Length: 214
Ligand code: ADP
Ligand code: AMP
Image (tube, rainbow, N blue to C red; front, side, top):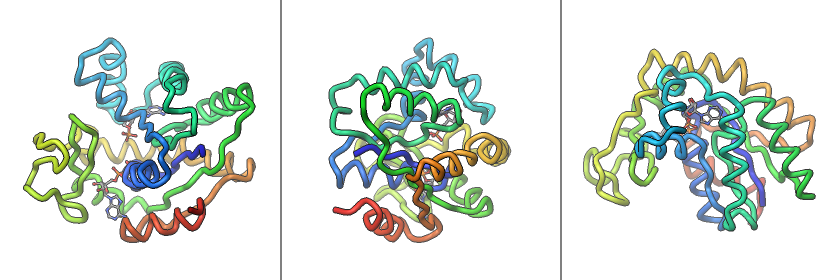
């Protein structure tokens, strides 16, 4: 099963992708998580990506496409995957389609988590991330058991640099300009499904289950 998660930054793509991965037994692939891990390990890719990420800009397509194509070669992708944060531009979607076509495969679902901009600002300012294991929390809607501490690995939680309000506004603008057109792209490919992302996390997941089945 191959799924792409669409939606604005902070819409809940990662939250739902983790639930999908767990329920359906496919790997959760987040390009943002891969970049953050590279930044943490101070790799060349991480240093390159950070200059864009800190400003709320997109990392250039060539870098992201190369990264994701390498990730697809890992054996855990054989039964499919749920992509979170990829594609973010039409050229990225086309690169994915070409790779799938070459392998004689196809995308099953592009699930668009729909949340208006006003709600996004509140989601992002309350988001806390574990930079060690990738877990995500919200101080109000999904708090950790112990304040500011990851439930899974006990690491101290961080407010992502790019979740500050000025950067979020820039990210939203770029989203509307470059990523939102993917809704039309996938609608024309007959695989677009919309879910109301303003609902409670479990309700959003129920809507996804209705689309994907058991
Ligand atoms: P994305 O991966 O789309 O950037 P996240 O999954 O990280 O978004 O969610 C952004 C923030 O909003 C996180 O703090 C998360 O815990 C919270 N969140 C996600 N889904 C919901 C929801 N349905 N209701 C309230 N808060 C949510
Ligand atoms: P995310 O964790 O998905 O919110 O991504 C955080 C940041 O990583 C984005 O704001 C971009 O700077 C960068 N990034 C992640 N995925 C992509 C992508 N597919 N294309 C370009 N930049 C990306």
